[in-house]
Amino acid sequence: MLLNHVQLIGELSGGVETQDGAVRIQDGKIAAVYGAPVCPEGEETFDCAGRTLTPGLIDLHTHFTGLMGYSGSDVHSPMKVLTAAAQAAPRYLDYGFTTIRDCGSVLRAANFVRDLAEAGTVTAPHILSSGLILSPTEIERADAIYEMYSFGDGADAFRKMARSELAEHGDFVKLMASGAAFHPQGVPQHPIIAEDELREAVETASRKGTYVAAHAHADAAIRACIRAGVRTVEHATYISPATLDELERTPDCYLVPTLSAMFVSGSDETGFWHKRLGAMLDACCQGLRDAYARGLKIGFGTDSMAGMRQYEEGIEFRYRKENCGMKDLDILLQATAVSAEIAGLPDRGVIRAGMRADLVLWEQDPSMDIMAAAKRPSAVWLDGRLVRHEHT
Ligand SMILES: [Zn+2]
Image (cartoon, rainbow, N blue to C red):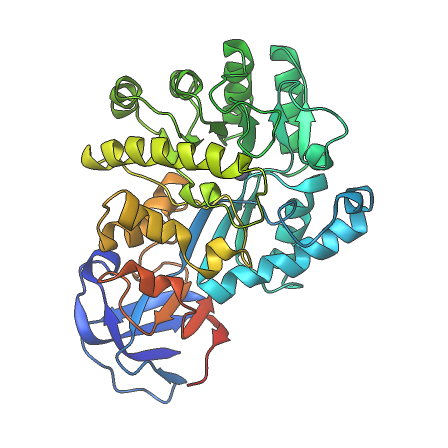
């Protein structure tokens, strides 16, 4: 298939910068990128009419179970959880996300939806899934999100839990290194994991050729994660300049901030969430401005799910632009090439021959104004297959 008359952004297209180019797709991969339109050789052609083509977007921190679409009692019905998850996953394509990393799912439902998607039963983005979240004993058993966690204490327990999640086909290991923001019982400023627990999880994951993604708001927890060999530090809300110094010196360790998680979209009669999350947003933006000024590679995550207001309104894009002063092109790079590199996915994130043909066509150029990527894209290709198309 030929995508003709596309605008390409040089930084995302192997240096091919053009107002009117073309991309050839073959066998699910990008076969060639052209700086000028191409005369079709009897092949199927899609006229992109000068719109901007980017690689598919990547969300490195989402949860497509547990945030909406099911009620607390559903966690006792695995079939309901699976059904809701299988319905939720395809919706990411509506927003141009073609790869998502699920950082913890109820009853490991995301593992199974990933398998359904790989088998072609469900048309959903490529999914990386951690299964259950490893946590020290922290929240009470009565909580509805309990089924998203695996609890244990001590290095042996963390070795066992990490092995269990990988044996259940998790792609990586997710753990809790600090208190949670969304649990009233959690205190984000508290580090909650011991050093030996953290190291054991990291070593267990690396023996299986994968890595640890750690939930860490507290500065001390972030520092412990960096020192223990964690690959992605999620949220990183209270990161201090001294910890950023350590991060700068540590290879293969990256921040995946999730500013949109601090967006209060529901009712909040007591003001508890506005107060808690507002202060966290301020702290996180401060750390992120510093990380950005240092030129660190920053991953793109939302800690929300497709269908929520955060997606509908592009809150993660907006906060990075307006609250952190990031350039439009840099945010677009974070949500594509940089996140692909951080997650160790060398076959996507840029438009180049040999890459997966995960592509998105936008009405306006998101490298000029990232909020263009907050609108529904004109078309989405997944492995070279047209999976979304807005007829205009
Ligand atoms: Zn999360």
